[in-house]
Every structure is written in structure tokens, then in C-alpha cells.
Image 1 (cartoon, rainbow, N blue to C red):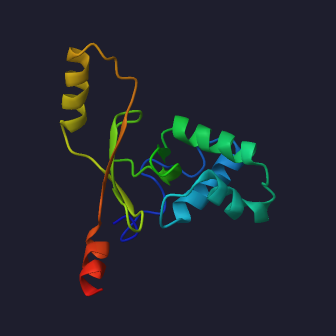
Image 2 (cartoon, rainbow, N blue to C red; image 1 turned 120 degrees about the vertical axis):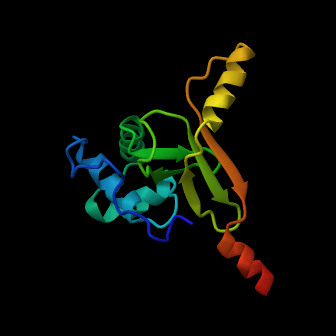
Length: 148
């Protein structure tokens, strides 16, 4: 899913021009190099050799990256993943998450998020933002299960 042909930088990433904080830059590097979503503590472990050892420092850096639209937080995995940049910043995002290997892919299906937000608005619910996570089994894990 995400690991094949994956970009090492999110679309729109222009060097370090959009980020001012050294810690946020380093956290983005770690997430960009990862082949899967990482928890804040996994990011912290990978940043420790560079001298970043405080969880609050990592959480602030990740928060800044989410605010900048460079990273998404996956609630179901309690993890972070680099944005692929194929949507407007701060728009509703959808992910498919393999429940076996946790491979994650950011997807865009035109109209789905809009239709959902419209339905919720009709019910009087004001949507502030959404990350839609769809769980299942990726093609790779499905193939592996067939071989067991």
C-alpha cells in the first residue's frame, strides 16, 4: 500500500521553507523515511540520537506538522503519517488502514466527504474537520493469508 512508490516528501514540501522549528523539521524527516505510520513515542525513539529526548517536545513538533498540513494523525492507530498532498489543506481526508500490517494509504474519493458533511449538516451537526479511516486487509496481507 503506502510503502511502494511512496514519495519521501509530501507534495508541496519546499525544503524547510514551511517549517521554522528544528524539532518539527527533524520529526518530518523521521516520518518521511518511515514505511508506516509512527506513534509519537516511535518518533521520539528515532529522534533520540539527535538529542531530542522529551515526549512533550515531540508532541509539540507533531502538533505543528499537523497544523501546517504536512502530517495527519490517525486516531485509530494513535499514530502520524506524512500527508501525500493530494487534497486541499485542512480538508476532510480518508485513509485505508490494513488491520493486519497497518499499511496505510491516503485516498481521495471526490464527493464522499462532502456528501457526509452535507448529511450531517442536515441533522444539525456542524463538522469542524474529519479524518475518515476505513479498516480492512490490504492486497499483500490477503495474498499472504491465502498461502498460510
